[in-house]
Length: 196
Image 1 (cartoon, one colour):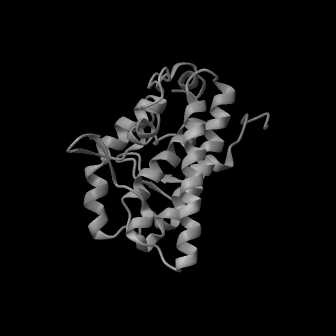
Image 2 (image 1 turned 135 degrees about the vertical axis):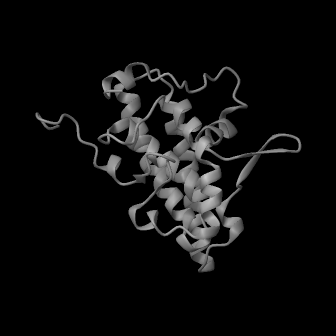
């Protein structure tokens, strides 16, 4: 811990996020978006904004990066890689983002217990296992196939597909657990402590 800057979280800076549309990825993939992917990513902008808000509350990527913006950037990156072409190898990157996101949300849960971040940690570790398993299958096949990527939508009701966004990622896994408290969009203490 630095006396001047407080706790420093190097992982919070790994993901590049556009402050306007919340498109997020690792630096080397940020500007290498295929034309066919751009429309899909643009169409999901509001879903990303709503999803991020439902998990951590209001978030601003124009300012300095902090633990909250660093943690949510990994969930945003998972969502964006879900819409990327196989050429950028999205499955291993979603695995890495899931694991690193879990670590940062674990830090958030330590600092601000009782805000539901533990549910996100559990979910991200589960997703990391799923993505790493798919990554091993990809490595054994020597290439990534469309079916290795996983679903691009989840059935909300019969016949109605909903795009995966950060919020849908969480709801898809946790909607069936009776008595489980959903993660609130209210920043509460976390937002005030991080200058929001």
